[in-house]
Image (cartoon, rainbow, N blue to C red; front, side, top):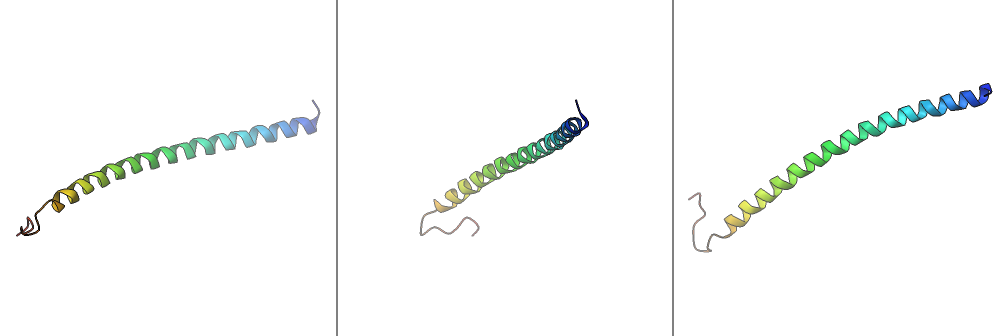
Length: 66
């Protein structure tokens, strides 16, 4: 193997190593974001349930805080 080919191979291996590390970092970011989204979806669901329960009060009835 000549020095040009060896230099190109080393460059490719170095680039691959950097890309592999970036991929792992981005994978972690995506996993954390998905966990955050899942939590927010659950919170939104609970808030919508509470809002629906408040909307079930009759029109002539005072709100629960009176």
